[in-house]
Image 1: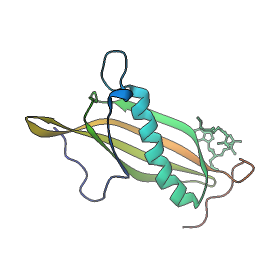
Image 2: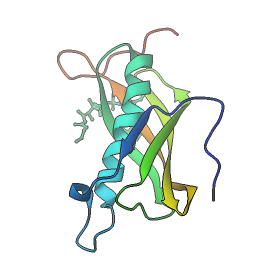
Image 3: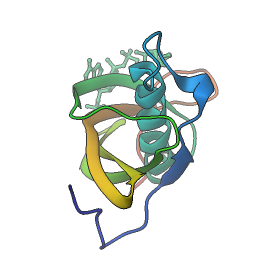
Image 4: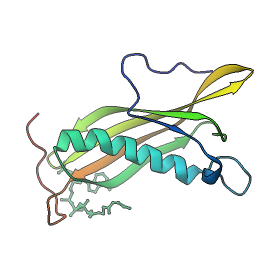
Length: 128
Ligand SMILES: CC(C)(COP(=O)(O)OP(=O)(O)OC[C@H]1O[C@@H](n2cnc3c(N)ncnc32)[C@H](O)[C@@H]1OP(=O)(O)O)[C@@H](O)C(=O)NCCC(=O)NCCS
């Protein structure tokens, strides 16, 4: 069992649904990757003060499986601000009931987002 971060709320909490499963009946890794990207983009959007594009997903690690009915919480942390890019670390936790409630860290990744303008080209990250 793992402990959820207590110093900040999750950026996203979402229930894993039957529609999100793979052929074996567990939650599809691509679904979790999507939630991680969305969570990271929320913080990136705030830092960039507008539109961002995901340019890289690094060190994506699936630590434990996610099951239908798990409550998945995603926590983000700013790693680095560059000229036009921002690097965000994301941790995903699943809470599930097996008689008692269990929390498990299920995935981690570091993503890079680029601030883009109307023309979809990189623009500088505003001074924080
Ligand atoms: C994001 C995009 C606009 C960047 O354009 P680009 O011409 O490659 O931009 P640059 O080479 O000037 O790099 C911009 C920043 O991204 C960083 N970057 C580029 N490629 C990177 C990579 N593979 N990993 C990490 N950072 C990267 C650069 O270091 C730079 O950061 P900095 O300005 O903070 O130093 C362009 O690559 C793009 O449109 N990609 C598709 C994005 C997308 O559709 N994502 C969703 C996929 S479904």
